[in-house]
Amino acid sequence: MAEHVHGEGDEAESYLEAGRVSVETVTAFFEVAAGLYRVAPWKLAWDSQVLALDVPAYGVQQACLSIIGRLGESLGFLLFESFEKYRAFQAMAKQHDESGRSPENLGTSLLSLDFDRGADIPPTMRKEIAAHGWEVAGPEAYPRVLLTEPDVLARPLTDRDVRLVTVAAAAVTAFVKQHEDVFEAWSPVPRSHEVAVKIGTEQVTARVTAPHPGLEGEEDGDEDESEGGRERKVVNQLMRAFLAAEAQAGQKEPWLSMAGFVCESLYGYKLDYGDGEVDGFTAVAVEEYLLDYFPRKVTADDEVIQATPDILTRHFNWLGATGKLAQKKVESICKRIEAKRSSFVRRANDPSRFGLAKGFVTMMQAAGVDPSDEKAVARFMANYNAQVAREMAPAAAPPPPLGEPGASSRAARSPRQRWTPRPGEPLPAPTSLCPCGSGKRYKKCCLVR
Image (cartoon, rainbow, N blue to C red; front, side, top):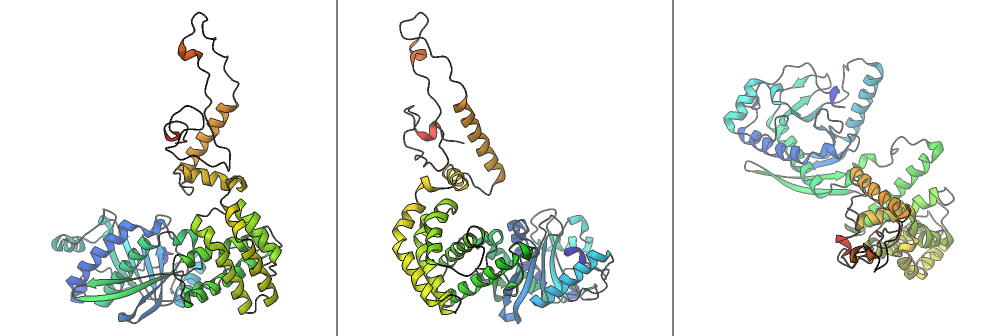
């Protein structure tokens, strides 16, 4: 989206904007911008994963912030007055992309923070940086604030403009450090983080929330409704409403994140392995999810496993209370959940019940491999396949028995096969004896590295 915001207006030659922006404001801006650049949120977020920004001291409520640069272009962020203004800009950008003509009207004004190469910064501004000793994070990390009006022309900045962008940058930096995983999962579970930013003698409080509430109820992704897109949309709306109700009732993190994870897997089972419908839950279907689907398909730690029956009970009670499921069915389902609680916990922790994919993920995690790291996974699978190939290779000719000419004590020992776990088979502790019978510790012997 960034290519649509740079107009042909007169380029500002001073960070101080002819005295309209104070030195203390620009000093704080550079310090905060350097921190944002080092965190590099554009490596995690897409520009469509918009955040809400609240800065009460500046009268900013649910402004819409879009992080740009995922593809390596125009690093920084765009800040819109509201979600509606962001949508207007999106519509303009789409029209421009389709027509190929330069936009004459952006549909809104916006503030932006951009990081440029030092060579692209006017000499007078580079001299200001050197004279004041302002912090720059790297040769391509020279920060600039732009105010672009609907007519695609850059306008002069005020002290408040730069302070607002500074506060926004500090809030995004703190949010990403606290909730780095939010962009990968992009769950309807709202995540917020509040931060106090000091600019000179002023201290400003800001809050970032993801996803932006304006996204609620919108189509997620580009799913074809004929292939389940409509059902996925309904599920997301249900989950947002349920989690919002639980948050209002006093539930906090990490419970809300666990509830989002469990409900996503529940509806994933219903849509992909059940009857394909969002509603119509029965006690039999929920039992199948607990005792078969979850143990085979869902990779979760013990905290999530222990919490799952209670999360499901609260979710089905909420469905009943909001009229989305008949009360008789709710009572039957909740009774079944409680009756199967111990069986569920036992099965969910039993590696012999893990499916092939879950078994491999569990093996990787036990070996210290991050399943989201493609290169690490490729190395793990190459080592695993090599071990399996060695096990399946024809055995070497047996060594001569003791006493025969040329037989040494080493040659007389029985050859040892390298031990390889089967999918779903529990791994020994790294410091325990290796199952291959070598007498060595597992981590010093057959542990896949």
